[in-house]
Amino acid sequence: MDSEALISKMAAHSYEINLFGIKIPMSDSIINMWIAMAVIIVLAFIFTRSLRKIPTGKQNVVEVIVEFINNFSKSNFGHHWRPFAPYFGTIMLFLLFSNIISIFNVIPTAEGLHKITGLEIFEHLPEFEISPPTKDINVTATMAFMSIVLLLISTIKIKGVKGWLKTFVTPLPLMIPFKIMEYGIRPLSLCLRLFGNILAAFTIMELLYFAEPFLLPGVFTIYFDLFDGILQAYVFVFLSSLYISESIE
Amino acid sequence: MSDLIALAAGIAVLTGAGAGVGIGMATGRAAEAVSRQPEASGKIMTIAVTGFALAEATAIYGLLIAILLYLKIGG
Image (cartoon, rainbow over all chains, first blue to last red):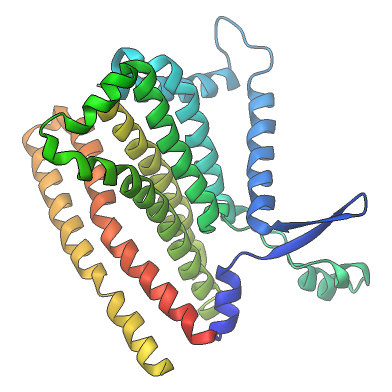
């Protein structure tokens, strides 16, 4: 694989969707996010139908997930946990599905379909590949921005404007520039950590698929796609909740 | 020029060494702490994971610089 092919794999592709005569440019990370959202919505719909007081079958699974999220926010936010639990649960599930989405990349590409079936239709389809949307820095930057906005809103709401301004000078008035810098550095590091990890895992997997397509990627995908994806989703949620709990105390 | 850029990208990835040492030490200490107090393993785990994430950040920044340099070669 030459460097140009690798760069085009790493970068975000753009497609044009024709909606009532208006051409809308779409990057593939948006389409992948839609796929992740659709999977979550369908799963949520299937798992939460006909809930009963005494859980049976699939309701047990949902209750374990909800309990994990509730305990997570209780241990981080103390008695303020209630409004934070749904947000962090949503972010955790969304990041989880977006990070590990590339293990579902079993659909052959348009070129492959054309070669297998010999049908003319497939030749003109745009090239699309299921890849983690978090390998696009715009997605992770948005996530980090949402976290820092939540931090600001929750701090002001719980402590009041005066209490929020007091956090800038809490140990010493000397700390003001550092406290202001924190509002820029924290989202930056949140964003870059998720982006860099997922992009690195994705690139390594692409190189592996090219170098040794037999059996070896199947072993490494467990670490790079599954384990790393789950860990990074947890780390993102954990660090942003840590920042918020530190700020609202 | 592109040779020098490739060399620079290689040097940028050397930040991984620091992250490796940091994560190794954190894991070692975490294992020690768990063997001393097995009942506190849950708390130790969360602290260790935070430490890994923060130590890893330096390596990720190095990788980012390397990628940015690498993209320079093509264009």
